Amino acid sequence: MEWWVSMPKLELHAHLNGSIRNSTILELGRELGEKGIIVFSDVEHVILKSDRSLPEVFKLFDLIHVLTTDHETVTRITKEVVEDFAAENVVYLELRTTPKRNDSKGMSKRSYMEAVLEGLRAVSTVEVDIFRDSEVECHANAHTLYDTKNGTQRKKIYVRLLLSIDRRETTEAAMETVKLALEMRHLGVVGIDLSGNPVIGEWQTFLPVLEFAKEQGLSITLHCGEVPNPKEIHAMLDFLPARIGHACCLGEEEWRKLKSSKIPVEICLTSNIKTETISSVDVHHFADLYNSKHPIVLCTDDTGVFSTSSSREYILASSAFGIHKREMFQLARNAIDFIFADDGVKRELEVMFDLAAGRLEF
Ligand code: 6MZ
Image (cartoon, rainbow, N blue to C red; front, side, top):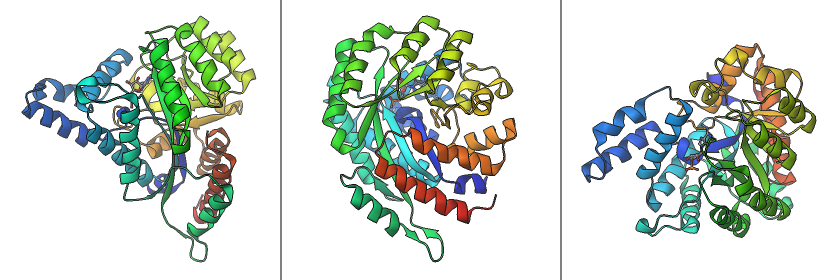
């Protein structure tokens, strides 16, 4: 385990509210129970359950969202989630979250995002790089991070944000999210994600909004093929997003289309297996994509909901598919090409990986 933790990793598919520590969720649940807002004993077993079907996962998210409705809690969970990924030696995190409006808490989509940014500023265990505007400054930064003489490294994590559109939303609400993303670009927002319960909502609702986002230069990632839906999967691949998540339920034709498109796939092994989207790890499409050198990146999806971590996902892939440490390291490094941050950050990450390659024993 220690080796896998010490290997630098990139996390490109992590939902904020799915990545909350279990201890925090239970604490928030108890507090709301004491205030009489929920009955804690009714929700405790829902939180602690380990395997959940996909519909059950979305019920859990509805519960989690009840527990995380105020600004202070959003700030707290953001801080904790970033610190947890940094402790796993994730050096670049693209954290995604759905901006939420909640009138009873005086929360707008914007103030929700401000609470997220506050959480990034509150991180104390690691230096957080949220945004810089000059590449010159980036490179200077890269060098001050390492003491090359003794190979030690001051801990640093790059964090960029993706704003998620929930498939339950209307075109107008989705457009509000995209406009917010555009306004917050100077604060580290780099893209848009389409997620939420895959059996709800229509692709056509989001297409004009996503086209607008793309035209404006935001990078797009789509949850694609979490359930069988050939028409939608074709339409999504035709849209040419910068990346897709999951790609579990593709028929032969969609599979061919994906392979020829070279669209990078965010793979979430534990999530797919626990939700039974894929029946077992040995039949997971990771193997086919990996063997055919299709661009892929290993991700966690929801570390809290699925009790996993970045290191665990790498260990699982290595043991299930018989891939050695050096190749796993290369797999992690390859993901630098698929990040939504600028080339300056990519170069810095390459430096980080090169230094780690000299330090790690393979
Ligand atoms: C689709 C998912 C998901 O945005 O409130 N989400 N959407 N498939 C998944 N696979 C299991 N896991 C999480 O984080 C929680 C939200 O992320 C999306 C859902 O919309 C969920 O409500 P935020 O921070």
